[in-house]
Image (cartoon, rainbow, N blue to C red; front, side, top):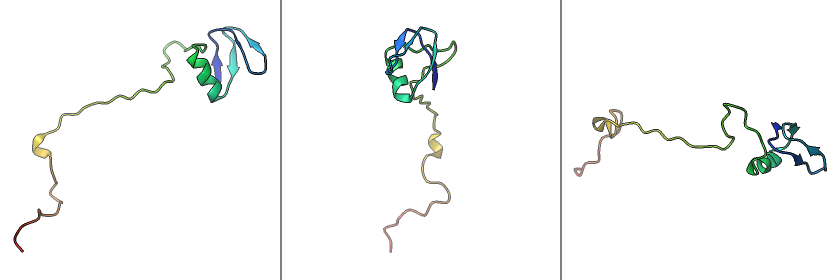
Amino acid sequence: MHVRLAASWTDPRGTVWASGDTVDVDAVTLAELEEKGMVEQPVGAESTKTTTTTTTKETDPQKIGPGPSSPPADTTEK
């Protein structure tokens, strides 16, 4: 994955990269660089961290329960 560096960085092979350089890194290295704040986020781009959004929908109390195709309730008579 290609990323733009926000700060100078020396890769595991000893190559020195300047701030603003674009480098090709694997997912593990990318995570390490992001953790250190060394990866630029393009303007308008969202973070690569995942977030969960939960929306709630009001329920109609008259529609709660089994539908018309459900089997009849158990009866005590047999």
